[in-house]
Length: 335
Image (cartoon, rainbow, N blue to C red; front, top):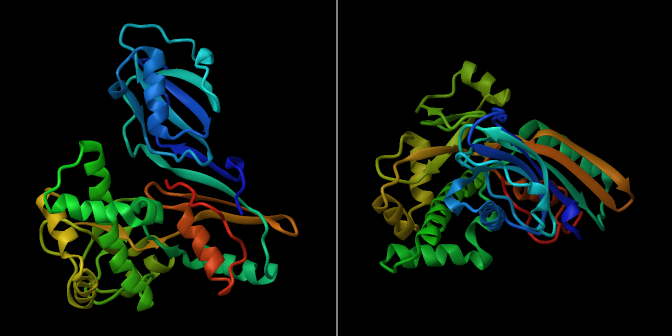
């Protein structure tokens, strides 16, 4: 199992590089035992600015050793001496100037290094599972951490959609959890049908490495070749206003899968979200495994933004056998 934050290492893959000039400090920060929002507030306090003046591309959990970028808006001011930050477990590795605030989602993805301890099972069988995941990918579920402890975020989302007032920050979290649950319901139905990595009649296709999608379009030989090359993927709904873009068998499955989630669907439509799509298949990049000793396995791979290392880990563990090879401990962070 994972016993220390060093067993779960996450390094952000930025989509931008610092400009070298401007009114923002671009900080490359390593943190242990601190979540992203708390650290952003601490950076603002140290610099004497508002928390709104601190930008970051993605949230990272505190139960890991993570490296990520922050920007701090310092108009007409010199850079603080970040070496004096003095936060336990936090190190500012570098500082440069940048012209703009770092926005959410401005990253290529994240690189993960996971160390599983007390591993049991047949290494040869695990190697076969690894090869299958490398070739086929995994179902692109939203991770369990999206839904809070014991799924509490979904219960609170239903309360919010039924009229209970929530703070703005919590409201955004609950809306996200509700939308994720609707998507996961459709993906579960596709997994049960063994169609999560192949097209159905009336399919809407998602482009690899992009939030763009197209269709509905029948699976032609050309699309089949692109699907095999992981250039496109079948997609599922990110719920909102408007009609589903899928038709025929795909639309029928989606409608049946979400029929019992009316409170969540209606609530998502009322808050003004519109129909969007998300890939049903996730392809881990540069997936590698190394046995450090007879009972310790190290996994390395990269994922695009908004996807979950826990999903990859669960597939590798559960696909091996009914008795998992390892117990990875508490859920590690997304992104």
